[in-house]
Length: 366
Image 1 (cartoon, rainbow, N blue to C red):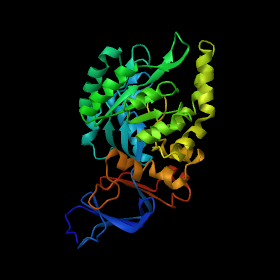
Image 2: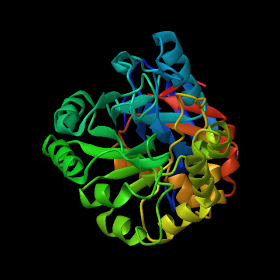
Image 3: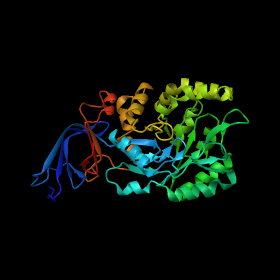
Image 4: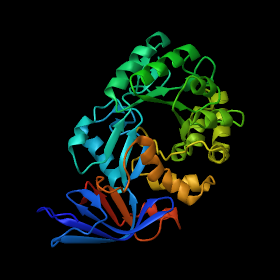
């Protein structure tokens, strides 16, 4: 039994989804933390009813990033609040030029796991986003971002090469392998932006931990990813923009435009093949830059459209994603970060778009 403090108690009545096939009847929030034991002497109790999930995870998000690079703090705050109100309470920030450490002191904003700033090849990425360097400097920059981040480093694995007129790898294999090894030595995992096919084998065989987008994942590469346990974050709501991007660049780079269209056309087959092979798949929206924040429900629905079972798509933004990132779910004593819905999200993931209540650090914030 838990003795009471002066802080109000929250009682979440209904069904608590603590795992893919684990359901509990209600929980309590005392001093901002979860308990499944009814507290002694609870008087000032607020009750919320419904179906509860752990706070959703957006594993590819960019707080502090706008279309032209870093944004002011008030804009970054608006981004974080949009994610929070959509139920995203844990973000893996997959590259940002902004310093968002100030959010850590805000109990009303999502928790952020940072990957530091993108590391790209010179003039081979969006202007204002990344450190733009040459291969000889890659190890040093990876070490720098590994020390600045929260256990992750983000590489730009491929981008358009104007001389080729198409997507091409950013890094020689030897440079990538040395940089990934240095990140691992420093206790950080490495992920990489990759649209195309021809950057993937070298990065996976060099020990990379995750690939963002992974639209270039082909039948011959699927077993390699699966055997190495390399996760993917497909960002399908971002890949939906490929036809528009292709149309905008076709006159100058027709080969690149045609390539983007092919990657877009097979996007669902790519994700389903990865899931069927046992490759870990997680939810990420690529919010920030040009995409709005708060798209996590849409991305879960896209995974279901790709053929991933609903409960597994939910896991990709809840239980499974939190375990992958080393953060708790709805465990006894864990911070009370949860989202309550009117109906069972396992029956229809579209309910994620309409949270009844959002609870962050034990407080009802939305």
